[in-house]
Image 1 (tube, protein in one colour):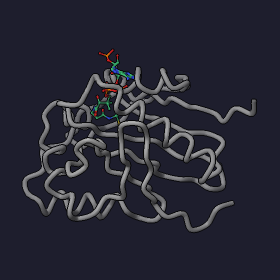
Image 2: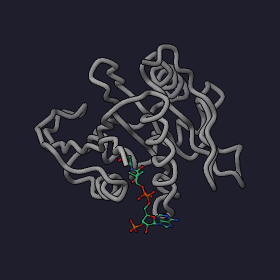
Image 3: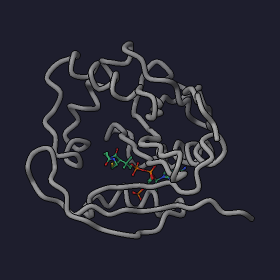
Image 4: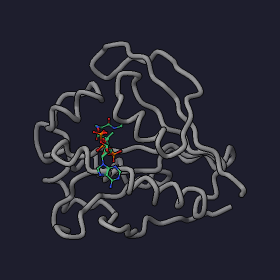
Length: 178
Ligand SMILES: CC(C)(COP(=O)(O)OP(=O)(O)OC[C@H]1O[C@@H](n2cnc3c(N)ncnc32)[C@H](O)[C@@H]1OP(=O)(O)O)[C@@H](O)C(=O)NCCC(=O)NCCS
């Protein structure tokens, strides 16, 4: 079982997945003031860069692996975040999560990033299952993971940070031994 896994830079055909630092606060602020992004989270927009820095601090704790998403042809901008979080070593499970600037939706960017994270979860974290959770109305996120082989297993009702109750769907991808 791996012990001290550090977030390392990953690379795909079009993307660089890099550790997130306070230097990314301005781009994280843009993401968390993007109305289309926030619609899925039930949280208010960030008010200032300090709030974005606080989030960055949370994203870098010990069982939370987060990467900033950058396009290789424009690496100075962080356009999204993807993560493997709530790693449960005993249960050999980890959750996958993501946020992409709405200007970049519809280009297959998160599919490309998730393919890399899925390999990372099975090979580096040695999990047996990757879990995705989102609200039932988040069709884009559901389609994203279903295209990558996740299947719907469960739904439950959850109170959102803004007080609304929403149905959440749980999707799971299991390691295959072919
Ligand atoms: C979830 C989210 C990342 C999905 O973004 P997305 O761009 O739709 O995701 P994908 O990477 O799967 O892209 C798929 C789209 O790219 C298109 N596409 C274009 N080029 C492509 C390529 N080379 N490869 C694959 N798909 C491609 C697909 O046709 C598809 O478009 P469509 O939805 O119009 O059919 C985005 O909606 C988001 O950040 N939402 C807010 C946060 C959120 O909900 N997070 C998840 C819940 S916790």
